[in-house]
Amino acid sequence: WPEWFTLDFSRGFGRNDPPRLIIGIAPEPLRQLIALLPKAPLLDDIKKVLREYDVEGDFLLDIDKPWGFGGVLEPYRRASRDDGHTLIEYAITIPRIEKDVGVCKDCNGTREVDGMECLHCMRTGRETSHEWDVIDRIGATLHVLGIILDKPGKEMLIGIDTKRKQLLSLRTYLGRGNAFIGATLSRSFGDYIRKLSEQHLPEVKAATKSAYQHMFPRRRQFGDYDFRADVHRNGQLIIDVPGDACGLYVDGMSKSLHEVSGPVELDCHNVDGHHQQLTLLCGLATLTSMARMDLYSRRIK
Image 1 (spheres, rainbow, N blue to C red):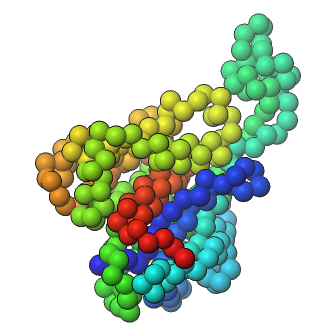
Image 2 (cartoon, one colour; image 1 turned 60 degrees about the horizontal axis):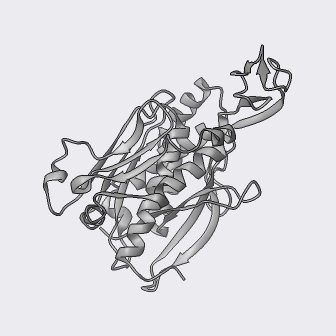
Image 3 (cartoon, one colour; image 1 turned 45 degrees about the vertical axis):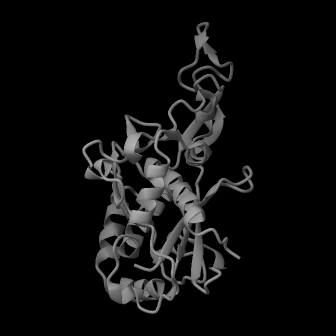
């Protein structure tokens, strides 16, 4: 199939320039998606789920402005390839979930209680709260985009004129306690992964670390031991992020591990929240960008 969407990631440069997940979509499937949504029951169903989380907000449909639930998809740029292929890019800004709300009530800012490290504030001396609304709106918006990010109808792809082939399809589900993420990598992307066997992926690890630690700044004091991105034997990709064995990976029983070429399925384990889902997606976006650069050496203009 022709390339109808792309993923990329920008690590940003600090508080005033936060990390961003970047999604590029070909104009025709995007136009058809926007035409389809007002008639589909999907948006009402998702709004009901969000209300269960005490999250309110409509799905905004003006794609020339911030759109999606709460306007989490921000116009970024129009990317033109050397072959004339155009993608409309949108950025999802990685939100700050953990907020500083003042001096820790347990240790009064001293960082210690009875001569021991204060576990309540993790020895920071500061009290924090968590705001989940934005990350839930992002998870809900990604779920809606699944109409075109997974396997859109072929009629949606008519008119896309490019020699580039789609590198992956993407699936994300909405749900606290079960925020599934999975993907199918094309033959060329799968073969790219196989070439990286027995290697670490520092760029992918850096992306997940950047996204997660922006959401939860206090995690920086624990280093990066919870973050892993490696390709094991025969192209077995494993990306891990903080959680209870939380990750995106090629299953050890996958038939792709016994093939020298072909597509690859990615599954997930214990992705309990949209913050983990988004973190893993930022890692996958970085890897996708690396593969696209390797396979299509011409850069975006």
